[in-house]
Length: 178
Image (cartoon, rainbow, N blue to C red; front, side, top):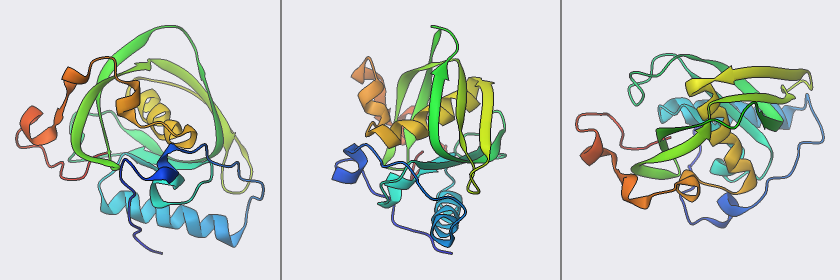
């Protein structure tokens, strides 16, 4: 449908708790999902949350096949996730580099649960229940943080490990980051 503007860190919508979706299988929800998909694809994102395009609803999309911004990343199936709930499966945290389309040009080391279960719904209201680990777990946690008003720098333990992508990873195509 449309490639939408991605809000940047500092915009108040990115700091709010998003509202749950109460009606599934609607033209409005499908239009939002199409905009999220098109915007994520245009920016080479690994995922995108509705608040990042100014819509304060609990909706995220994510997926990675081959991405120039994450050349070493494992594949993640394209997923639409509405009203998600994430449950860590153990206490183990794993540090990893993250970027964000709402924080363009920067990356930082962020601790995330290495194994999680996520539950929610697809656009038609059908239940989703998956157990994942590694990069898939990192991506879903990152995207769902947007639904509670958190950006990855808020999760960082050490801001000395935040830097410009062009300095940290020379040659990586990363002008807009997520």
